[in-house]
Image (cartoon, rainbow, N blue to C red):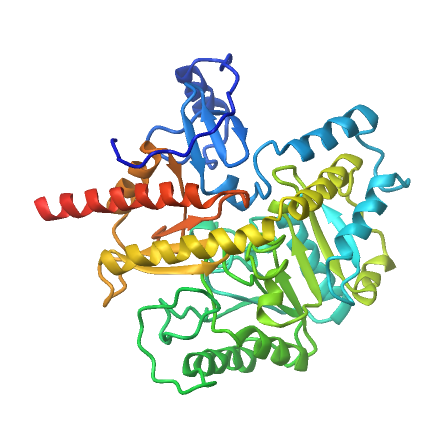
Length: 473
């Protein structure tokens, strides 16, 4: 696919690819790797090296990575600082497990908890976000001695049998009993939901929906809070274990709630004896730009915070951070994680925190993310199929529709074509939403405004081509 957009230069030279030919790789994939692990694109990419915001395939082609391995590469592929720290630790000590002290777990725990407000100062390290959310559910139930947990429709909190009850996206649901003690409530989605207006979101870009609210009043928020109260009054007992929410929904396509929703919801949950869990797996570590943690953008302090993905820049690690009191509920019996908090993981985690600070990545997320949101908003105003542009920092969603009035999802084959075109022009974008109708843009936090100019121009070209095809039908 040809485009006038010129990819920004990069002085990194990838090694020559030396593994099996593409066809053989594909054959092994088909025969020996579980078919549930689906791949992106008609002709799946075979990637072999990465450098900061760039990925290189087996033929040496370079791509701008705007999905960061599903919002996981936070500071950049193979970031030199993280790589060197990991190499040193690899040669020193891989594993002892938590029955002994080793320096890095204490060093990391101190470093991580210093970035969280009181009383969130006790950490339990795990290996994945599903594991972290699983443990958060477990702790909430142990601590409150209640059982029911509420999550939003459209939420994604993991695919393990326990967390699947909180995950509320049909594609992930399997036909086995799950979700005992889990209730979902209406998602306060101000673009696609029944209520929404032009001031609701904490984002540089608002919806195209009109609203008649006067200063300091948000009708949409009031309506969604009524729905939340309705869930509390009908679907759960009068005391509950808790409520979990992502500060901005990830898998569902960067969905944002009205500004004061979480604050009011937290209060209602606590009145019922429940605790509040913030799933920061995608929003944490400076990605939203204005704050280090997503919950801070809502002016709340949760009782439990779960962290994963960007915490390790691609190394498998995750964490549950909570209060002393809640953490002690787990200490009455044994609960053990062999690999959680390994010497290696803790060194990686500490190096990631250093890199975020030294490279100014939170500020970069705010500056470059805001710039990108405003540039994408221009495309929304130009193309009828771009229904909504939303997000904060480098957590961005672009929802595709047949038209702005109906807000019907754009058909899959049309979205696929735009998506494939972007890839062919060298830009990798994620997908999300209940109908896979939303492009997810969550790049490594080191990207530049020049990268954004290139990406937006590529997206523009793909949209232009889509319009020409539609007109020719």
